[in-house]
Image (cartoon, rainbow, N blue to C red; front, side, top):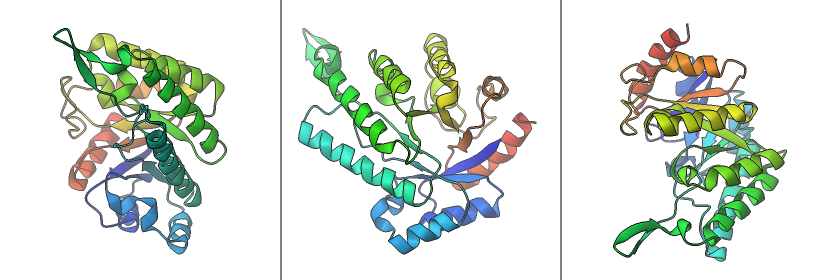
Length: 263
């Protein structure tokens, strides 16, 4: 297993995050760009070459504030351009993948009931389809762009749009096991079926624990997730397993626990 951890608020820059990973015998690190210190503009061409020359696998988690559902075309185009910049940054540092959330829409009140706007207007589906195709085409042969199972991934039409794009374009997946566990048995089975249908497209797996009710991001082994079950499901592939537990001290606790689960 290639086991890494996600760096978020514990580090001043990517170099410090990599050194921590090397020091503690991780196999890779994922830089979460929620932290502005990991954004592309923070790194010069010389620094990007230095990151590449570490020969320590780096993955990137794109900022969660970006949404592929925006129906304002100029805003959506700007969002896509920003993701293109992240893709180029990832390619230049030889990153092994970029994880991306689809984003979300909003609800409106109709007859005293809150209704998701995308259930009423086709344009939100169209925006997602347009975005995924453009991003898949741009990232092709550059880097593995991976869609994670969270936020808008749960919308009724999103998996269908994503399925079509996975079948026709060079797009990848990040399976967050904690997100699957917290949504209830029926929806979890749907998640499982979706990912197993595209198992060869899974580049990354996020690992953290919870008790099946909310996204706790607890230390591995302190919740109710059966990690051995999921490892058995994934034994035919070799993804990057990323411990998504903060802060870094809790990531180290999870690393030790994970070694026991994987034994």
